[in-house]
Picture 1 (cartoon, one colour):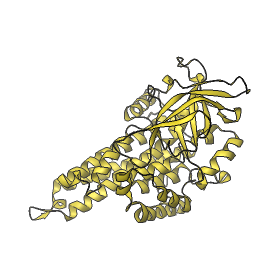
Picture 2 (tube, rainbow, N blue to C red):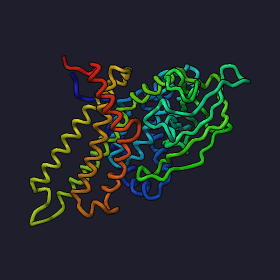
Picture 3 (spheres, rainbow, N blue to C red):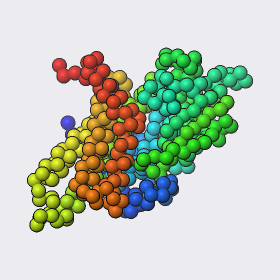
Picture 4 (tube, rainbow, N blue to C red):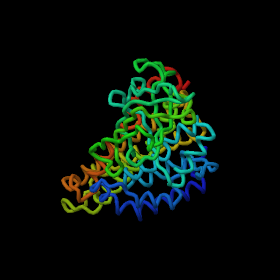
Length: 389
């Protein structure tokens, strides 16, 4: 058992850490305040070859895998959850293609993500079907004019990066919309310029400003047979399973950033003839939070290691879900502690603690809420997928 990163991964970690300190840290507050898409940071990621970390080399990526992307996102999110999301969006919509796409689909869609010439989004959630994926109402009916083609109609909501996307991975029902059979769901690749695709609304969010969350409407959108991805509901679930460590990385990065900032503040804040960092009560809170961050890191790195081996099927779901659940909850706890340690100052925009606090809440909701993760873990234990005997 080796807990050390390889030389390549360690160098990647240090490279992204420097970039985050030099380019992202000074921009984080401005991005949040203006809610403007940070194209300059996207360009920095492209120049540093960070957009293709999880994409195999044969499709233009660097082949660093989910572990490489996890490490990069952790470093970036120490200063900006928004920029962690930007990197996450190189894997979420491409995952279904990498898992079940045809060779032609991989050659057509993956290189553009890796080199930064295209962007994509993942369209699963609907107004009445967030956690309840089988309740989706978006419909794909056979195209009468094109054999093997489909016509899509429906609405997807809360789509991260939806306004910047050049193409979408979309899941829709090919059978009765009222059916809850998993076999009635199919995946599609839809170019954003296809007639019938529109983006009528951008959501106003509590946090994670700078990358839009949008509503995507599909109205009589024709997709050819070469844009159909096999796998359906199972593919959607496996794609999300493989994403657990990547979302978890945003959690541990945010928690690290919040605790580091609050700790440095406590070391310099004088009260009662000493710094508040000298109070045992403050030290204990810092210690407990640091321990939880390290526990979350171990869960997350193990989950990334599993996902890189293709172990994101049912037997491994509890361990993958543990990482996402625990890291996102730690992010909420650490950001709350950071605000508390700064007191009134932590509630003000003079410090990034209130920004960490707002952004952390998103992580317990996106890509499977904490409650969904607990359900998956619990069923895994009941079914002996996770067992100790």
